[in-house]
Image (cartoon, rainbow, N blue to C red; front, side, top):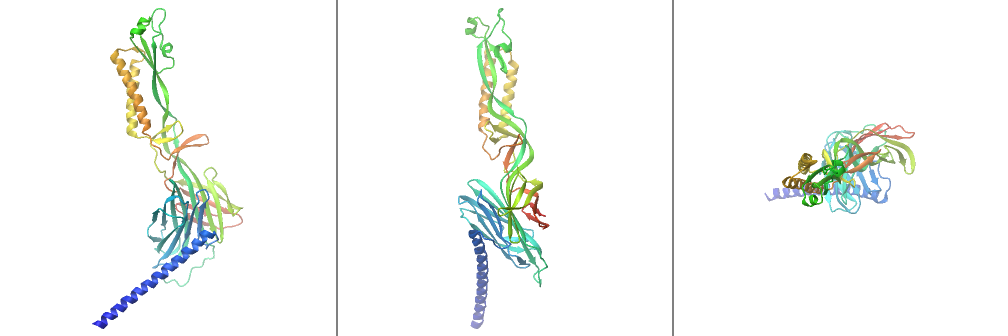
Length: 434
């Protein structure tokens, strides 16, 4: 019995040792890969053909992705991601996706981080063949959100495969860094929100003591009414006339239609073989040069459908200030404001150009005061949001930041004197390299 127990102990000890060796090997393997990419980050040297770089000097966000050239069904591989970002960034999220792999963990989100941030995922193959892994990174820096996307190509072999398939083409990878993406919405003409003001004077009369016309009493006022006044009567007039004016409040409403366009600024990085090409493209000029360092070696054109959603879907009506800021409407307040407006207009319209008694006069004054008070309250309930007015070709649009990177249906890349004929998929975007 004691001998059997000793044998069992030795078997368990051997198993633990085996697991420890395997763990140490995997840890050292992953560490070596991370260190090699970390060196790439510090030395900015040309890495392996599987290393993708996406950077934007204006935001100083760089994304580095490494996937091993080969994986095997029934096993797993390591996916390393390095993100370099501004030192004041408050959070970073890293999300790998692929139809051919499952990832452990599913994603990584971290706060109070330092740059560069290194993330490691276990990639478990689900199907064989040439596959792509996409990585989406979200960096929050002082409230500003920047997205970066990159992809890596790898080949998954069946476990019993004796040799790799013939493939003489160079490895090609791509990444996209996007900033200032927004969705544009068409706007209707302005519907001004008036504030009411009053003036009064002893009613102007003619030689026969008859009141003069409305135009002669109040000029360009919207409404007028009169009431008996002892002071004006003693001065020889028939009463006191009140003129009610609609003054601009500095605020107005506009109807917002469905999305009608997008604005964007992207940096495309394309690695073909040992050469990395870059191009900066924006919505004002969707056709740009392709560079190899400082040399123009091709061009990039964005065509096809662009799609995306904004961070906050605008209301059917927006409140817009005189400084071109835009605010979302609280529809409850807006509907109540409409009731005050209708009540005030109906009452002033009913008494317009006529004489009123003290009770009617008090009711009119109360209606005007209530309308102005609620107008101020309604405007003050507007809260700042990210949307703003954007002018394109003389037309005003409502511009709301995109909630995630825009998807480009077709980004065409032409490298002079080369025929490549490959398509890459980065996130929801398609890159066709001619």
